Length: 416
Image 1 (tube, rainbow, N blue to C red):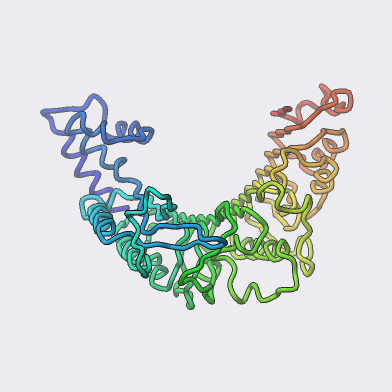
Image 2 (image 1 turned 60 degrees about the vertical axis):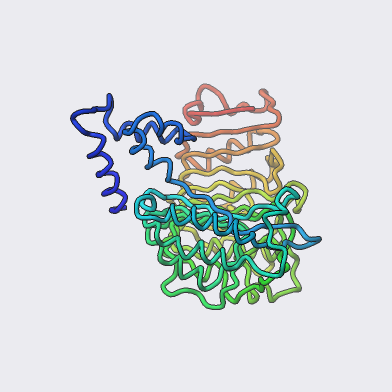
């Protein structure tokens, strides 16, 4: 960040010329510019805005180094033609120049999905897009202030991991369907604070030059630096475990796919040494069982997350782990995108002693709100300050718990 601060200071010195004062200090204009999506027109307004607007205009870089096309049950990567590659490399080199690179704080490397209108851009003869992909990652270390990186459908090799390890300011890594083809994990490992594992909406795998490596993402991430994890798998199937699963972790072929996915999710949760925030999205509707049992060899509560402060996800996974006194905010959803959970099942979940009792903010979505559920919430979480309850239907006569005497227990209650 030092180079970015020096660059901004130079800009400030230019726009603070006594001959041409701005009505407001540059710092305020930078805050205003953050809410503007298109800075190109704003920068044409005056020379001062042109200089200050660089901070926002060049904060986010997006680049597509290959084309992804569906081929039956597989994805295939196609390379761009030489002229397209040359044009995009020139643009990338401009962004990586000394005048622009310090402003880049976010980068997204993703494919363009094939359509017939792109036929003239595809290099149809035999060849791979690997060279252009490697060229992109070779330039990433030039962005000294890059703190958030999104990569999609990238086959991650040792060479790419080496480049990622040079991004000293990188704190957030979001990976979508990125299989590791690396055989060896980098040393030291990647220091990432926020890790996001996503899978696409399809169930396709890759046909060309992508043999699963011997290591997965958990082998290359430093467990001591991770504070936030976000997981979003489209279905409880192995095909959606790109990069997380390895040859070794999938060696047991006698268990169901959903159980193997659950094992990998537990592996993700057990990797950090001080996880503070956890968000798990539900699977696509209709792709999993109504309820989910833990793996056959797993004991409920054996995985401890003592530093967890915030949980947002299916109630099933929370009931599997043990949380400590740091847990303050919990939002419980269903596993399969159903809008409401069974009040009976949620009642059973809330009563489990492995869930920390110091929760202050609780959000649940239930089919009905019986007295017994409210009594259980009060008994287990006496420190609650905010309770949000979304219900399919509410019988006001049944919910007698909300009497004037007990109203101080619920500071914010929502019924829908």
